[in-house]
Length: 201
Ligand SMILES: [Zn+2]
Image 1 (cartoon, rainbow, N blue to C red):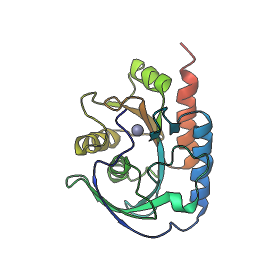
Image 2 (cartoon, helix red, strand yellow):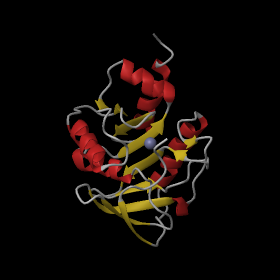
Image 3 (cartoon, rainbow, N blue to C red):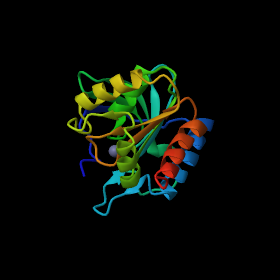
């Protein structure tokens, strides 16, 4: 599984993301997804799944790298992405841990669609397969995870979505599914509804 390590150039300054109501919301959504196995750790120990919310402008708070095993996160396990540049493949963050390896993808989404305030990236075999079968919006299968090409592709796809929330598949990132929305409950609900549909024909 091509996951769990950072492919972009990371610049980090030490700090703690201040506590906020949105951090509580993020933990609430994350624990729900963790309990469903949509966020977690593969048998080889590599974590998967990451959540973020827009802070201001294109800055966003995202879960730190290598936190997949934890059901609830503490303040030290969040990072504020202060700036990023897709073309230079670099991400600048503030926090005590490295930002999620998928920070660039989240950033591309926020930059492409100003109405998106929440991004939830999960992994699920059944959800991934079902969404592809239903011809859900998808990035190309030949674009691998964690590359500037994926970030550009995700940005282009998100820019075409007229309605929030929406769910799309990263076909070149096995099991990778992303939900984007204006607020936490609607974004979480979009994922849960998609998961629910997998048991229907
Ligand atoms: Zn992933």
